[in-house]
Length: 115
Picture 1 (cartoon, rainbow, N blue to C red):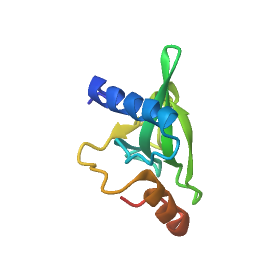
Picture 2: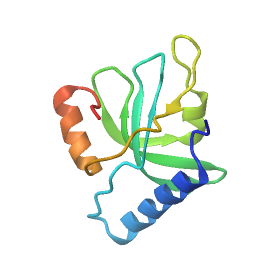
Picture 3: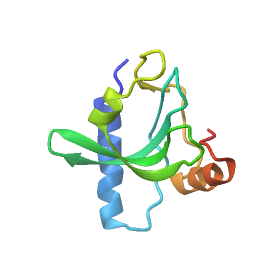
């Protein structure tokens, strides 16, 4: 499965452009990534082009109990491997039901991303 499809890329870039125009815009996550053999989870809501790469922005949880809002390069996600050597996967069943700020607030309380 392709980690980031052209459609997902377009939605992420559109959200990023909208944030430039509307700083108070609170987008819903577009995509959820996870490590099937580790505790990593990423809820990505927008992106910016970074040369040949994409800078993805969202809620990042490495499974250490401290989820945080921030950036991750797509190339970095593609390089992540879990305990069994498996790469990051996209959750095809994920459908955001609230804005990213709500996921952030919940994650701070729980110490982990809950979707």
